[in-house]
Image (cartoon, rainbow, N blue to C red; front, side, top):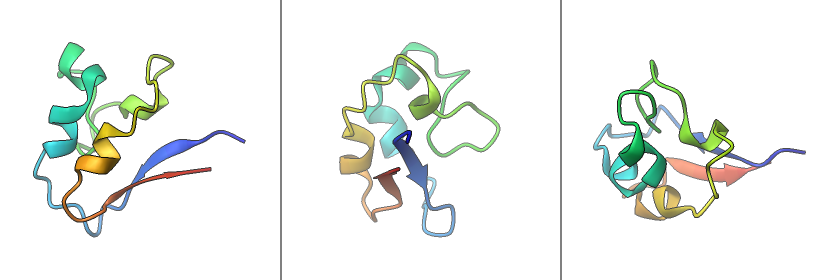
Length: 67
């Protein structure tokens, strides 16, 4: 099974803190975002190390790491 970072869109505040903590988003902000629906999710990239800085930084727990 593949582990992924999931976003709960119902509780996300669109604050962008998760994107600021993600090194993949920092490298290519026009391509990746954890919360913007039109962009690729960094957790789906082979370069994502699953450091979980994004999950830890979410102020209301909208990001989780699951199978």
